[in-house]
Image (tube, rainbow, N blue to C red; front, side, top):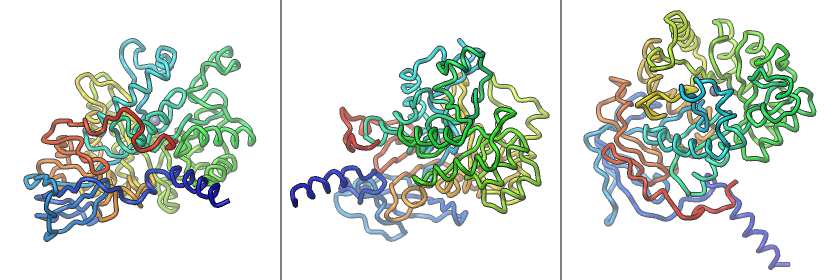
Length: 441
Ligand SMILES: [Zn+2]
């Protein structure tokens, strides 16, 4: 009896996810931060020392003694801040001019899930290099390439941000595509890019499929089709996802869809095109997150008309003025020649600047709000004892010039140095096996 109980206990303990494990013993590192940015207070603290033991922060302050034998990391000429969050991306999808004329309809015909998973691994590394230590990966990742990415990072195979992934986007028949009857009826082209769910039974089943295959958040197409979801149907998604503690993000492109999503009390709304002053006020009242995906007008090969750009900027400004919960979320799934995925995401800072949002609040959206929308705030983010050590550094002061974030020189993830002096040094992140355990699913 005792023996079998013990065996059960061992299984239970090894199945505990990474985030719930107690601090691991490991090397002690001391970071000398010339300037430490506190995004919550919107202020700079000078001459701070951050102690990191293994994967976690153990102490921070001006007079923290450095234990003998600790590795000292000198960032005394830099601004140190917690890792950044990108709240809406698709790491296993890349719009490209060649061969598919930026039409992702063809991407998933041309590229296998396996190839897209490898792209996701590469894009994850590119994001981390730009300082994004958490990415919400919101679907369009073929047959769960997003889950594979998250597992590979969490198990310890490769470096990458903490991934909060959605699995397959769930929508009414056809998803975001307009398939031919052959494609739609045989379910072998729209799926796996979209998961059709048109009835209550199908909604429940679709959520469960994503849960089973490793999603951490549920993504739905609220109104991609004229027969989009009603508020009651969205409530059903929310209830089913809540059973496993997950939230629901809705892709929204019409005002009617936004109204249904807000009425149902959805967690987050992706895309801002349909959001009006009135809808922003309702979102603010209910605390609904806005994952706006505001595209800048500077991306080579992805033109935005001046009128469209003005609307985007005005929309973001209006949301800010209405005190809507804002996340930094780009939807940047394009290949821009000469830029990494992380650098493309940083181009989106221009929209926030053009909307007149103070730097301190842009930084809050990229950090504090990011931890909240991704529900990682209890374990990751703030530079405080007990939190995972996800720490970055930039020259200059992003409170004075937000564009300083474009030159991230130092990145620490889970206490390990990923980038130093502007150069990626990720050797320590590569392992020949799942060093953190194969049970991480
Ligand atoms: Zn998207």
